[in-house]
Length: 460
Image (cartoon, rainbow, N blue to C red; front, side, top):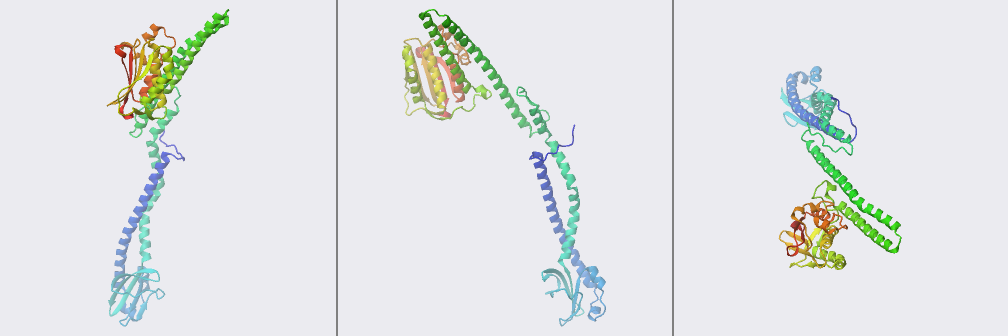
């Protein structure tokens, strides 16, 4: 195991943490130095005040006042300035006459300033003479700063060692992140297995869990895409093969009647192939598996206020001619409502949904039959339904009809070759993406099929 952390000078979490910790340590040192300096200054002042008193008591005032030789060594040792004045205020002795020492305004200890210099002065009356012993405050401050510096100096010496230790500890702490990053970097696009969740700290575990959920969704999307491509290829093979055969028949046609029949078959084949491709594209746009298998993914198109009544009339008008050609009575049913039924939805997707429902109903409703499109507002939301009186769907098949390329018993019994088996699959996907529920029930007068798409109140 490599215990030496990798040094990175880029903009990394490790570098940020290290700099932040060093900044905190340095700030702590500065605060400690300031506190130590303040405490040292108070203690130094107390010690030096005592020293001033002792120095004043050790000075032979009578000897100084009589003009005898002064003890300069005592003054130098105490680092003080001595001045003695007689009872008339005349200075009889001044150890440093060049120093502009102000006269003390009171006896005892005072702090005075002269020529921009602060002095600590002790004044006392000895043998009818005024004795003043003064010391510059700068001496005390320098001593206090020296004490504080000596206290902080070991920490300053240890700072580089502390920085290396912090770097190593931060590197150890971020090792799980580097491990996860390395594991992700080694993954190939087809390798979507879960990342290891062993020995992960609490801060990294949510990230790995989220990545594993993403990998699960990607695997589901990949599998769905492969299945979709395989199904599409399988479904396209039949019409393309039929087109090839019809083209060969057309090439071998000897008379006009045979060519007309072959052209008609070729045209029908092209229409079926074109419809199948359009349905595949429509399914690809709304396929939830492309978004990880979730049925609550956002809608592909922009949402807006959609008037379901107007949408129903628009869809019916578009297929009215087809219904007329097939002899089917297609219309919009009415349910009494005080206001239009409006929901927030993707208009184009809902138009595709309703178009597929109407197309399925028209495809399996016999001539003379009836197809109704009904919009209603309920206490739980809006409902869009299409009812027909065709062969219907058996209860056993009602779940399977939403599978891709599944064609029910009615379609096979009717010999329908134009259907793609994608219409209800597209309806289900669009409904899921709007949070709607699709149900299949008996149709008109207990016959046929009644497809209801119930939208929740949240989109109304």
